[in-house]
Image 1: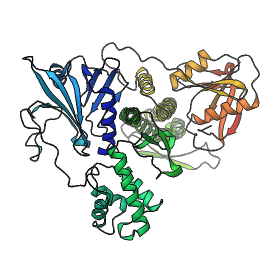
Image 2: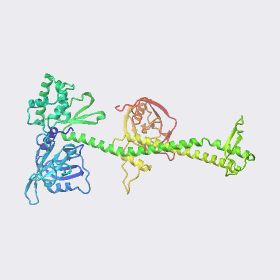
Image 3: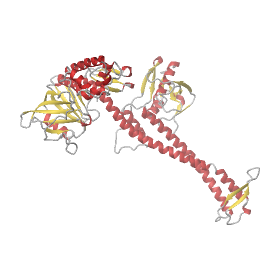
Image 4: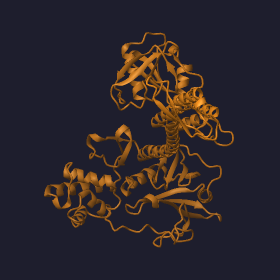
Amino acid sequence: MALDGAFLKHISRELEQAALGARVEKIYQPNREEMVFLLRTRTEQFKLLISARANSARIHFTTSVPENPKQPPMLCMLLRKRLSGARLVQIRQPQLERLLCLDFDAINELGDMVRLTVVSEIMGRYSNIILVDENGKIVDALKRVDAEMTSERLVLPGMPYELPPAQGKLCLLETEPQQIMDALLAQPKDMELSKGLLSVLQGVSPIVCRELQHQAGRGDTVLIRQMTDAQKERLLFFITRLKEKITDAAGKPFLVLGFEKKPLDFSFLRPEQYGTSAVVREHETFSQLLEAFYEERDRVDRMRVREQDLLKHLTTLSDRLSRKINAQRAELAQCAERDQLRICGDLLNANLYQMEPGMSSIELENYYEESLPKLRIRLDPRLTPSQNAQKYYKEYRKARTAEEKLTEQIQQAQQELEYLDTVFEELSRAVTEQDLMEIRQELQEQGYVKSPRGKHKPAAATAPLEFTVSGDFRVLVGRNNKQNDKLTLKVANNNDLWFHTKEIPGSHTILVTDGREPTEAAILDAARLAAAHSRGKASSQVPVDYAQVRNVHKPAGAKPGMVIYEKYHTLYVTPDSEE
């Protein structure tokens, strides 16, 4: 976890410099594990977020506006009662523990000034928000911990507040660098240096320990037993620098971005361990850094949960359709023998005089073949000769009708499967919660997902993606099937050019001509955009068809996004997402 005690010390300094002396104006609890304190000074206003989420526990200033429930939770009402109008007078951090104590001077019910403390414990799944009174006793907590959950440390109203159990590590604020070196060298000799530092030092995260190893080993992996004298000297030097930086809270907020600029990690030191495999970006404040990092993390988590819900439903539907198509094809294969039924009926009808009641079979010459081979035909002894012939005719007509119906049903099921395939593709390209809402709404309208009960306002439609290509032409790209239809059939002009990957699920792409003749470079750029917003985005030589919009039509009753087109050309392009 990157939000370690050392990083928290920098946050503490930032909160002190900005909000010390501020009064509590409002308190919100937007969800079960987060609190927002609205603090106001004479000149400024701050929103202080305290989160006890297991995977994103933190404390920092935030700029986002919380969405509050209609009925505030019990802890929120308690904090409002006790802390409304209270003044923030001190922020404490015991050594480099991952917790901050926010001390407030408040007025109690008798009109006396009392000191109340809000403790923000940032310890992964054990994170908590605790209100402590002037006597050091717990008033209440976001997460109560009773004897059934643990016997080490109870967190219940009326009990004295105790710090989390000590881990027996060395605190950089109180320990000399040489003592840390001695403790480190006493660790198992085959241990990697970064892991040894993590087991010895209090309040530092893996990224800091890896950075110390990177600096000491100059980029190489270092084992404690293999450390050279030069590496020990460098390590001692960097531990000393680390101590000074933490003591003075002199670090700076650095965010590490990985592939596609996804947040990987953060630190108060500039990380050099990633080399060229990541981008390091400095933020103005530590609060801005944490908000950028965790907002993206939370958004991705929410997206993943909602995506999985839709993905599971779509997978079930696709599997069901595939099984249905396979069963119908097997049944259709049986209908292929229907002509043999007609032949049997004809032969029986032509040889009624040879048949006698009660026969179970008969051999007749098959005059449909030149060699006139004998054909054994099964009979129902309970039926007359004429009835046996009519029975074969009836089975023939039944098979012919079944073939027509099955062919039609298989075609419809295949179209449905192709449509669901396009929804899979647009789901893979969804980047916002709004995109997922529109996909869900599309599936509801098509009857694949149940609509919620009651009246619900439909989600506002988002605008298509817009790009500028060679020749200063605009290119519009649909985000989903409904938007594809609107873009192609309503927004685009008849003289604009329509692009789509050939037989590959993807977005409708429109090159807006505005009455001009599009250049070859603009057409090539638009084709690349169409390929980049399709399932072929990771392939090379992707076939892309393009035609004038006037030559693109939607068949009656077709699914969203399904069109037919004529008078088209095909380009083979290699998409470049960065370009």
